[in-house]
Length: 574
Image 1 (tube, rainbow, N blue to C red):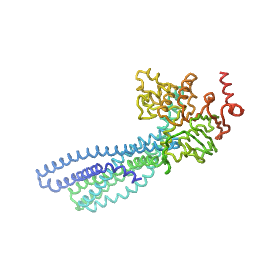
Image 2 (tube, one colour):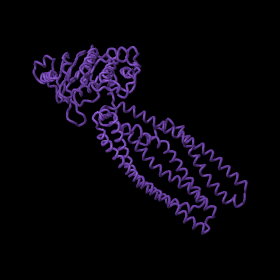
Image 3 (tube, rainbow, N blue to C red):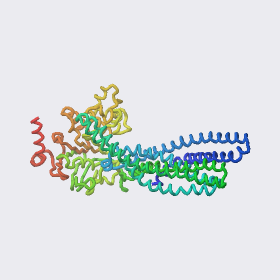
Image 4 (cartoon, helix red, strand yellow):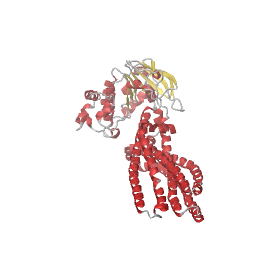
């Protein structure tokens, strides 16, 4: 872990070296004051050297002015280094997230991921800046003060430094409890973020069902977990600091007794004793800094460890033999495909189907039967356990993911639009498209006239997830996006099931236009929308139980006919 952390310093090594040099000079200047104090008490003052006293004071003042500049340099540029490292880690993390498979996002809440990108990496940045600086300055100060204190009196110095092993022992014992407690607090913070993100995203549903109290109850569970985790972490921290502070207090007691006895016995004079009292702070101060560093180190390493947990997740990869998919016809074939999520039951069991270029192939059947899963497997969002899926006769595992997905367009019931303008969301289909191509895609999706009726037209902001648009308008924008992408293969997953009849007619017209010349997989509950499909497969509990044209399935008198008859009987009743 340390090697991977240090790697983020490499682009800033020159600035980091300058920062450490400045920290070294700060430490050296800090040791001047007790030296001057010793000179004054033992030489300048007893000999009444007035000019020497003034010159010594001026020298110290000049050095302190230099230290002022050095401290600014360390604070400013040190934080800049930490911020740039944080930015690089965040960039790496986001880039890695974009490459992770669907399964990762199935198992991790958005709020938890956001915590790792924000607050966790902030703690890492603080460690990146203050950690080396505090560690370096403290070591220099401890070594320098030890040498200088030995110069004053070796035995008194050794007595004082005998307390160091005690402090180290206390730190080691308390550190483990602090690490466990702070890790738990990180997890509880992620839980709160996840609950908050979920509640805010679903605020309209909450208000519609007047369930604010229930959301508050769910939030409070995570909140109480955070409070309890914080209590434990602060308990561990309190014990740590109380114990180590007690050891430093013992320093002063030992110095008081031993120094007094040495002074009484005539081993040292009053000037040396006074200098020793001043100088021992050069030792105690960096020791306290190191104690504080333990907490900072704990926060930073915990955050970096959580960062690495995601970075070590296996990303989606093309197989070594994968080649780009070119000149796509659109033939799709499933050969004995079986699939399950993690260790759950089989979602698909030995599925085989064949869709020819330009055909419309429909999937129908009860919810949870595996229809949407089939749609997710074609663009290789999930990896199958058995069998193979072929596009134009090529196994999708031997096709680069980017080229595969570039040739597949998906229109779903749950449309996701990005916060931005109408133009931005249509352009998502092909980022290099011209305005004329955007307008043409919108026209073919039956949304252009509506957009032009708006004051800002295509530059109209649609709000988070398209909140300012109706369901039909969102759907038509998503269709325009696919028109612009112009894929050879089209997947329509319940694309009209959540719309009213009037809107559905408009959407269906756009979809009919979109399907022309493309191989199309249609998932639909409304069976009236798929009668013109070349072939229909009835999926139930992961199996194809019936397959054929609409007329063939109706004549068969099985599940499809029952579903069709039931649906139209319900429509007549309505």
